Length: 244
Image (tube, rainbow, N blue to C red; front, top):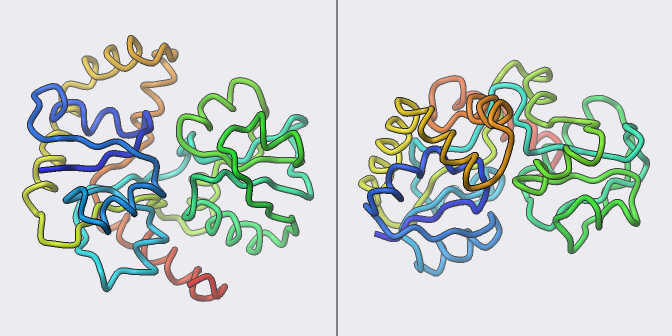
């Protein structure tokens, strides 16, 4: 089995057990590359961006594992140097879901900003030519240390809809329920052995333990009825704004 994994700290806990025990071959990549690997059948199963799944859901089988938050997500944020949402927002090259989520949030809040695609994924580079920067994953965690957070998109979505935001959803082209069961098993092991996973992550990434605890607890990785409703709501907003 070849299982895809987002190359971000947010996947560390759910994959910890399966990687520790070497129960499958894990292939790490960013969200955009993950799509290519899955479609070319170089991996059997992986989380993919929710927006891409919704746009192409007739081509994929969907499973329980996900990357979601019920409020603050910490690692999908807009930052700036002065704490203000500038007129020109640079968009990381790593995202499809988050940029469309930002479009919805700005429209619902009646805010007009120019969204500028960039070839970078680091806030430092994006802010050289833009007033604000949308960054995700580990780049967002790094940006929090140096710049001011203008928006946490997980929190904004929760305030807008009352539901969790599902940023990534596990999928396959062929039937790979066994892969999903393995990752869900690994996830539940990680939650039961939370302290071990956190200490391991602190040692590997050098991030403050208190922050990592808050970050891991903010994330949801198993689809439930609220996550399902959040994903459906995101699809409805995308269709309303003609993004899908």
